[in-house]
Length: 357
Image (cartoon, rainbow, N blue to C red; front, side):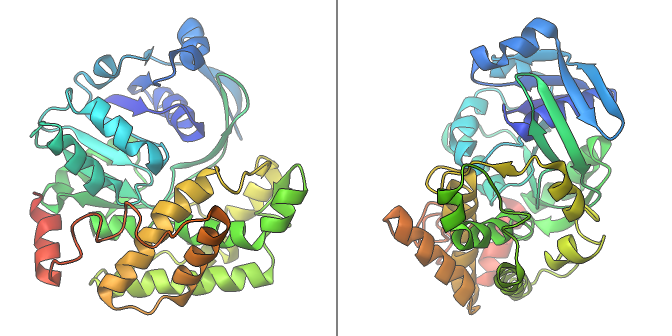
């Protein structure tokens, strides 16, 4: 299958190498042409995983987004949600009927990007899908080298508009057989693990993150008190899903720590063992704040308000992060109010998510 991978981070390089090795014709687009040059020059990415180290040829590494998207059946965006507006505007002149865009994860970006593309004048009938996490736990180890610690074994995926769900899921499963449908875009967005796992870790590890040069929030930073807060926040997420009528499985985050039933299977011990997550994290600029808290957690808190679900942990964490950022995060760009969804009835919202605009 012809697949475009858009992005230059850990997940994009992992996806480009993994899907190329699986036999797909991959175009890897990165807007920073200079940073992509080592991959362009070599024509490959070095992939490291449990099977060893090898060079994986990439069909087309390019800084030309039009070339990347041309005739692509599947477009994968393993990029932070803060980049979605720019990428949607860059994609808009090139998208055509029948293409499928996959956001792993999306932070409700399936809805947001579709609207941005439409506002840019492109009315192509495109399916936008999003899931709860990246297909890989991965870290880049160099300019064109990526280490994959874990591959996801379950990827619950929602689609916007939901009328295109069957086509989208069938297409994505050619690349990612672990994908299964979970309903509409809101259901997919409320599967997002980042806004549940990362804000408590950032808030409750703020002192060591600012004191030590490197700190592993998933190892020393994950203690019983942190787990207690995370579990309560995740119960709020599940309550919001249920309030909107979304059934299980809800993939409770506790399974990530306690058993093999979560999206990555039994992954937490391997994540810690790899050492790749002992890193320097800036409390103001890291994506765990800019993406998972300012956008993702704010979206969850807003969804809870809209659904009438009591979510004190979500609102409390949002207030604390707003305290050290120096701004109110309650009415951010992913709130129901900002998205124009706050005044819709439950039936009208369901219809909007099914039919599209």
